[in-house]
Image (cartoon, rainbow over all chains, first blue to last red):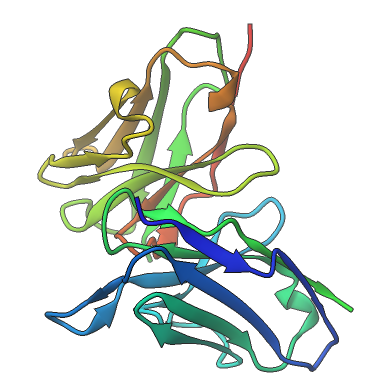
Length: 113
Length: 114
């Protein structure tokens, strides 16, 4: 299984400031034949299902604000929120869909400082 | 737009079989992979497995011996069965579409208790 490790486990950021969450996979999730990273990011608010934010490591899902961006390749990835809003308080998960079983990071809890 | 809705018993006795159904509305199930994911209380996400509309399946080895996922294209539904449940199977169970899980159901809470 591919192990996904997120850092930090929790993060407190001031409103309007940048938030950065990291995700590392135990093996590459870059498929060489199409040069795509099989990595997604999700946001989960309390008592709600996760919501897809980013797929292919850097493609924003339709309707997701452009303050959310994803970067990275191979085994190291980053989710960045450029200017934190109050509604961004949530737990964020990365997930690899390169190989089964699909696996998630342990989650990063984002709070307002 | 496509919506997913999980349904099934909220309480299952230990050693019995958990059975859930996901109904797809606003679109056809006859495309894509369809997954089940679960989340124990206060914990992270675990992918259980998926089914392709044609019926081919792939399960998480951690659960493989106890899990069956099936599809009924005529009803636009797919289903999950987990046998021999224990308290460790208590979780919110979600269904979702595609490998990148772009559409999720709201989830259904299943408690395993006598």
